[in-house]
Image 1 (cartoon, protein in one colour):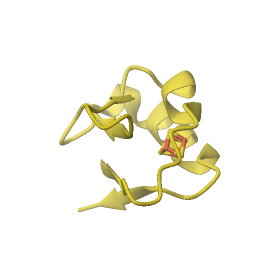
Image 2 (cartoon, helix red, strand yellow; image 1 turned 45 degrees about the vertical axis):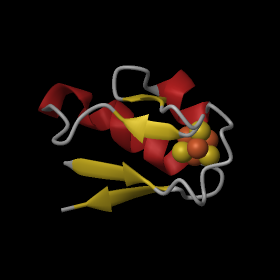
Image 3 (tube, protein in one colour; image 1 turned 30 degrees about the horizontal axis):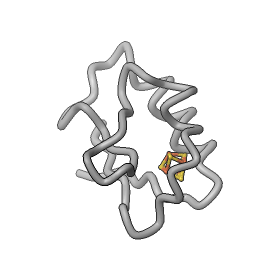
Length: 63
Ligand code: SF4
């Protein structure tokens, strides 16, 4: 599973990072980003939950 945060949509609410800090973190512009190019299987569930919880649908599945 690969995810990508669209920085133009992210409103820096922090929800994804609260739900799944193992996968999401802030980038230098204060937007969320994924720490993984290819998310390890054991983190996919939390990555997915965060994706579904983003209020502006900024997290997209890639690949
Ligand atoms: S939940 Fe969405 S809007 Fe909020 S920080 Fe994460 S990517 Fe950005």
